[in-house]
Length: 356
Image 1 (spheres, rainbow, N blue to C red):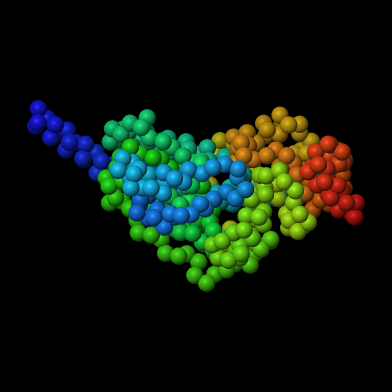
Image 2: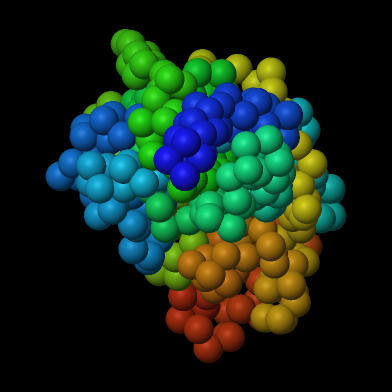
């Protein structure tokens, strides 16, 4: 009996020692350009912080368990992987009589869904290779878990001056997916990477380029100014924010567009839902509530914390910046719609359209 138990322990040890290599190999085969394991010791730097990666989102992040790796690392390890959000495509599909509002690259397609599909493939492969049951693993992607600190703690990225995680090969144009595996972190520590060096040096392009001056100092973003922070929240925009909003429908990419770390030699994969780089303002404003929800279902703009009213407000402000008379009839309907936020945005847009 003791001999059998000893052989079982040897088999389990071999499986755990090979799990790290098996998981990383499977991640590359599944199409993740970047993959690594979180070093629990590297999370110590985040103790005492409550940094959010989605300013303005009204959801609680799961910080407490994450910042106590001395507890979870005895029974679990964390695999993190990345997909590029970049794709070589035009940013604006507007026509002369069909002005569009723009969508930031991370929201143009359901890359979160694509990443989860790939992570499931990874876990299937790991199960076949090592016998680790998929049912004991937890996949996360765009979740309540603070994913960027995990990416930084894996050594695959470091925080940049724009407060985003800048990875070794993809820059900041990425989405993160991961899995919590029921294997102690000690069993995969041979695959831990050293911390990535500070990526920005003296570069301050993002600080200078921010249209609202939200990067108040390198690495610190004032969420009360950040355009991305307002994109999903149904609250009024002051005059300065409206002027800076431009023709955006969702997302602000300015600090990433100017970043020299974004090499753009790896493109985003095909995703389950593809919205494209821009949408017709007239179409967005003309849809009723169920149709608008259907349009954005299973995309970043269809997530529970993104307000449909905020998206309509965004489209109205974009209409004002387009100032195209073809938009006047659909914008006019919102001037008396009964929702103060939308009425205010519509009247502001109409005033700009009438100048033409």
